[in-house]
Image (tube, rainbow, N blue to C red; front, side):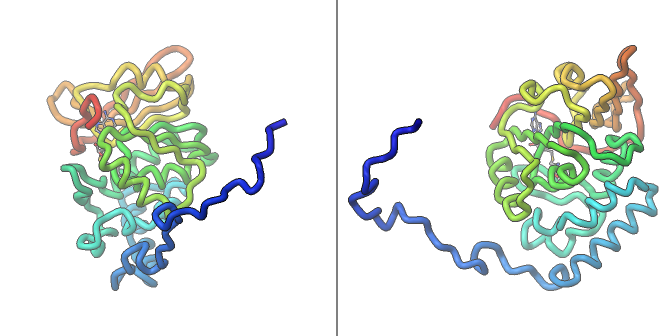
Length: 250
Ligand code: SAH
């Protein structure tokens, strides 16, 4: 049995500084700018239709794109571009990936299966948009970011969504996150010269990894790695343009 605290537990009233600050709701978040408020559902539906026209068919991925409000992840000045199929700056020289590319990668990750993915590792949280999408298509998500500023920004952006199955981590994702391994799926939003061995090691048998990496032709391509009972199968797909994968934290 835990000892009960002596009563009264606190004799001195807390100083004003220690009291929780009540922030009025309107001031807690910038007002939703015109064009993405009430209509944001319809604007997102139009984005989803464009992504479908590009060939993405996975129902779970399309539903996640419809559900997650991308405009909550970009700066107020860029909000009107939030539903265009374009990457946008998110600070510290990084970008939020194009929704079309994110959709393509998530569809690859789901391997055509309709059930939710198990535990997923994302390398490169950035602003947190893809992490939010992942939390809709997977049972549990670990997302790791090497830049402290962006790790904190994503935490701030994601608070509103209350995604209890999403865990944000600050660290060097090149090492993966062994504590959560093995993963049903691993996805990276930054591309290096190769796929780090740690990621392949932390992938479950039957699992799939999707990441940009520089291939033999000297360009970044989407690379799919399947871990099968009999070994590793690597497939190189279309050329892409992602920010570089870097080691260490900053
Ligand atoms: N999925 C993100 C995309 C962000 S861009 C989004 O939706 O916004 C890719 C991110 O990968 C950048 O924030 C960059 O800092 C991060 N990154 C690069 N190398 C990394 C590493 N070794 N570990 C963790 N994050 C890394």
